Image (cartoon, rainbow, N blue to C red; front, side, top):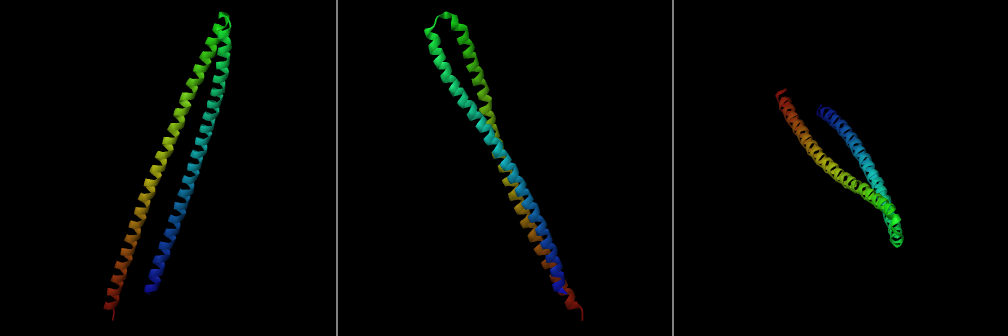
Length: 153
Protein backbone atom coordinates (compact mmCIF):
# COMPACT_ATOMS: atom_id res chain seq x y z
CA UNK A 1 0.00 0.00 0.00
CA UNK A 2 2.91 2.32 0.68
CA UNK A 3 4.31 1.69 -2.80
CA UNK A 4 1.07 2.76 -4.46
CA UNK A 5 0.99 5.98 -2.46
CA UNK A 6 4.59 6.85 -3.25
CA UNK A 7 4.18 5.92 -6.92
CA UNK A 8 1.15 8.14 -7.22
CA UNK A 9 2.97 10.91 -5.46
CA UNK A 10 6.12 10.52 -7.54
CA UNK A 11 4.01 10.23 -10.70
CA UNK A 12 2.39 13.53 -9.88
CA UNK A 13 5.80 14.98 -9.06
CA UNK A 14 7.15 13.71 -12.38
CA UNK A 15 4.28 15.32 -14.29
CA UNK A 16 4.88 18.60 -12.50
CA UNK A 17 8.57 18.38 -13.29
CA UNK A 18 7.76 17.69 -16.94
CA UNK A 19 5.39 20.65 -17.05
CA UNK A 20 7.99 22.85 -15.38
CA UNK A 21 10.63 21.59 -17.81
CA UNK A 22 8.35 22.32 -20.77
CA UNK A 23 7.61 25.78 -19.41
CA UNK A 24 11.31 26.35 -18.78
CA UNK A 25 12.19 25.18 -22.29
CA UNK A 26 9.51 27.40 -23.76
CA UNK A 27 10.73 30.37 -21.71
CA UNK A 28 14.33 29.71 -22.72
CA UNK A 29 13.50 29.31 -26.41
CA UNK A 30 11.28 32.39 -26.26
CA UNK A 31 14.07 34.36 -24.61
CA UNK A 32 16.59 33.05 -27.13
CA UNK A 33 14.33 34.09 -29.98
CA UNK A 34 13.97 37.57 -28.50
CA UNK A 35 17.70 37.71 -27.89
CA UNK A 36 18.40 36.70 -31.50
CA UNK A 37 15.92 39.31 -32.73
CA UNK A 38 17.62 41.99 -30.63
CA UNK A 39 21.03 40.89 -31.89
CA UNK A 40 19.77 40.90 -35.50
CA UNK A 41 18.29 44.38 -35.14
CA UNK A 42 21.46 45.56 -33.43
CA UNK A 43 23.51 44.28 -36.36
CA UNK A 44 21.13 45.94 -38.84
CA UNK A 45 21.45 49.28 -37.08
CA UNK A 46 25.22 48.87 -36.86
CA UNK A 47 25.42 48.06 -40.59
CA UNK A 48 23.29 51.09 -41.44
CA UNK A 49 25.48 53.32 -39.28
CA UNK A 50 28.64 51.90 -40.85
CA UNK A 51 27.18 52.41 -44.32
CA UNK A 52 26.32 56.00 -43.55
CA UNK A 53 29.73 56.55 -41.97
CA UNK A 54 31.35 55.16 -45.10
CA UNK A 55 29.21 57.38 -47.27
CA UNK A 56 29.98 60.37 -45.07
CA UNK A 57 33.71 59.68 -45.33
CA UNK A 58 33.49 59.38 -49.10
CA UNK A 59 31.38 62.50 -49.23
CA UNK A 60 33.89 64.32 -47.02
CA UNK A 61 36.77 63.32 -49.32
CA UNK A 62 34.81 64.35 -52.35
CA UNK A 63 33.84 67.62 -50.75
CA UNK A 64 37.45 68.30 -49.76
CA UNK A 65 38.48 67.88 -53.40
CA UNK A 66 35.65 70.18 -54.46
CA UNK A 67 36.69 72.65 -51.79
CA UNK A 68 40.27 72.68 -53.06
CA UNK A 69 39.08 73.22 -56.61
CA UNK A 70 36.72 75.95 -55.47
CA UNK A 71 39.49 77.76 -53.63
CA UNK A 72 41.37 77.99 -56.87
CA UNK A 73 38.34 79.55 -58.55
CA UNK A 74 36.99 83.05 -58.22
CA UNK A 75 34.32 84.29 -55.79
CA UNK A 76 31.22 83.29 -57.84
CA UNK A 77 31.39 79.76 -56.33
CA UNK A 78 31.07 80.84 -52.69
CA UNK A 79 27.34 80.14 -52.62
CA UNK A 80 27.91 76.59 -53.82
CA UNK A 81 30.62 76.05 -51.20
CA UNK A 82 28.26 77.26 -48.50
CA UNK A 83 25.60 74.83 -49.72
CA UNK A 84 28.06 71.94 -49.66
CA UNK A 85 29.14 72.84 -46.13
CA UNK A 86 25.50 72.90 -45.06
CA UNK A 87 25.05 69.42 -46.53
CA UNK A 88 28.07 68.19 -44.56
CA UNK A 89 26.59 69.66 -41.39
CA UNK A 90 23.26 67.94 -42.08
CA UNK A 91 25.04 64.61 -42.63
CA UNK A 92 26.92 65.03 -39.35
CA UNK A 93 23.68 65.85 -37.50
CA UNK A 94 22.04 62.72 -38.95
CA UNK A 95 24.95 60.51 -37.87
CA UNK A 96 24.92 61.61 -34.23
CA UNK A 97 21.44 60.28 -33.30
CA UNK A 98 22.14 57.01 -35.13
CA UNK A 99 25.19 56.41 -32.97
CA UNK A 100 23.22 57.29 -29.84
CA UNK A 101 20.40 54.94 -30.89
CA UNK A 102 22.88 52.11 -31.33
CA UNK A 103 24.33 52.70 -27.86
CA UNK A 104 20.84 52.89 -26.33
CA UNK A 105 19.81 49.58 -27.90
CA UNK A 106 22.97 47.89 -26.63
CA UNK A 107 22.21 49.19 -23.13
CA UNK A 108 18.59 47.96 -23.34
CA UNK A 109 19.79 44.54 -24.43
CA UNK A 110 22.18 44.28 -21.48
CA UNK A 111 19.44 45.36 -19.05
CA UNK A 112 16.99 42.81 -20.47
CA UNK A 113 19.59 40.06 -20.18
CA UNK A 114 20.32 40.97 -16.56
CA UNK A 115 16.60 40.97 -15.72
CA UNK A 116 16.20 37.57 -17.35
CA UNK A 117 19.13 36.13 -15.40
CA UNK A 118 17.75 37.46 -12.12
CA UNK A 119 14.30 35.97 -12.77
CA UNK A 120 15.86 32.67 -13.76
CA UNK A 121 17.80 32.54 -10.46
CA UNK A 122 14.61 33.38 -8.56
CA UNK A 123 12.76 30.58 -10.37
CA UNK A 124 15.52 28.09 -9.56
CA UNK A 125 15.34 29.03 -5.88
CA UNK A 126 11.56 28.64 -5.88
CA UNK A 127 11.80 25.22 -7.56
CA UNK A 128 14.33 24.14 -4.94
CA UNK A 129 12.05 25.35 -2.14
CA UNK A 130 9.10 23.51 -3.71
CA UNK A 131 11.08 20.29 -3.94
CA UNK A 132 12.11 20.60 -0.30
CA UNK A 133 8.51 21.20 0.75
CA UNK A 134 7.28 18.21 -1.26
CA UNK A 135 9.97 15.96 0.22
CA UNK A 136 9.15 17.11 3.74
CA UNK A 137 5.41 16.59 3.14
CA UNK A 138 5.99 13.09 1.83
CA UNK A 139 8.22 12.26 4.80
CA UNK A 140 5.62 13.50 7.29
CA UNK A 141 2.82 11.57 5.57
CA UNK A 142 4.89 8.38 5.56
CA UNK A 143 5.64 8.85 9.26
CA UNK A 144 1.95 9.35 10.01
CA UNK A 145 1.05 6.25 7.96
CA UNK A 146 3.59 4.19 9.86
CA UNK A 147 2.17 5.40 13.18
CA UNK A 148 -1.36 4.55 12.03
CA UNK A 149 -0.32 1.11 10.81
CA UNK A 150 1.22 0.38 14.24
CA UNK A 151 -2.11 1.19 15.90
CA UNK A 152 -4.02 -1.28 13.67
CA UNK A 153 -3.96 -4.79 15.26
